[in-house]
Length: 143
Image (tube, rainbow, N blue to C red):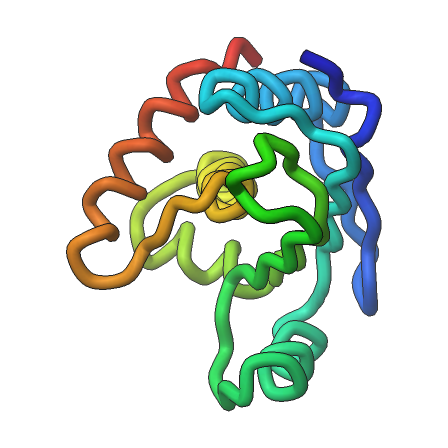
């Protein structure tokens, strides 16, 4: 389990997550628990408008979202490599609406992206499975 390939960036906002080293270790632990190795995983924290533009350009979706995941490897490879874009605006709003802390909601969204890279879906009947896996991953946090 190595967190060396996990990086944090920002686009159109200034944001640095708390506990960066702990976050990296936790994300690597979650990946390993699902049988995956992270070679390069880039988290890009951005604004609603930035993510909306990506959503339009790459998915032809004209709506706000909290996360977009762009994997570089097939889940069958056992490797996680790719980019995860997260709207900090959406995470803040969702945390308020759901009665969660910002940090808990951010961590849920971050691990949601990792789970997508392992091949886990979240539409229709897959949504409860995704939520359960998110909850299990959140329990692995030690910070």
